[in-house]
Length: 229
Image 1 (tube, one colour):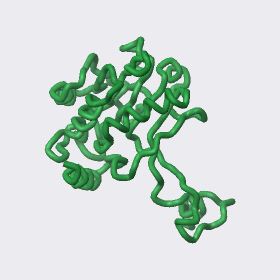
Image 2 (image 1 turned 120 degrees about the horizontal axis):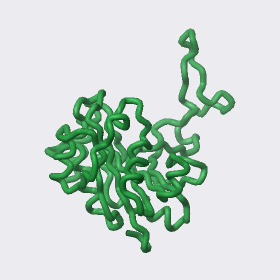
Image 3 (image 1 turned 30 degrees about the horizontal axis):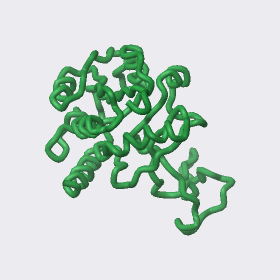
Image 4 (image 1 turned 90 degrees about the vertical axis):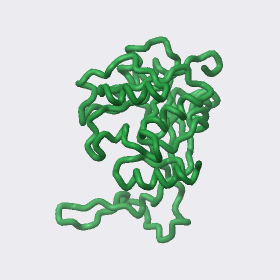
């Protein structure tokens, strides 16, 4: 709870991950991947309830062992490859009404800490905005990015922008890191997205912003976790 407002955390974890099979419960530095997110959430100063939204009984069992609640199993139609990321969050809000804020915590961000969760929530209150999401500094400026045309020729992503030869000359740009999404519950039900022109940003450092999507990401995350112990 923050300033008398209740806060629900939703950790989405479907069983059918394709890039890394059974990714959400694959061991990372001695713990299932999802455990790192549950533990960070449990250490938050503001989260009133931490629930895992899953369609998978094994994931549900693992999540319970680490202190998360499983008040429902997610319907199969909300656990498909093409299910929008907002779907499980809206389903959780329908199943568990009366929370003023909802926080989406993806288990693929195991380096995120409780301070990141709390600071993102605080930004919403301090700036009086409906939503806040975590971002990190982009590795490369968009002026260095291209797409390919039908003949595999380079086409600039920003064709009207002058080329920047040195990274130091480019303005800072930020990318979503997938770690923390916060929104007022009623606002989110209507907007159906965390990302609008009123969404605020909370900047996280690179060493806590890894979003796991491959086996290589697992190896990098494991080494980073070991260095933090």
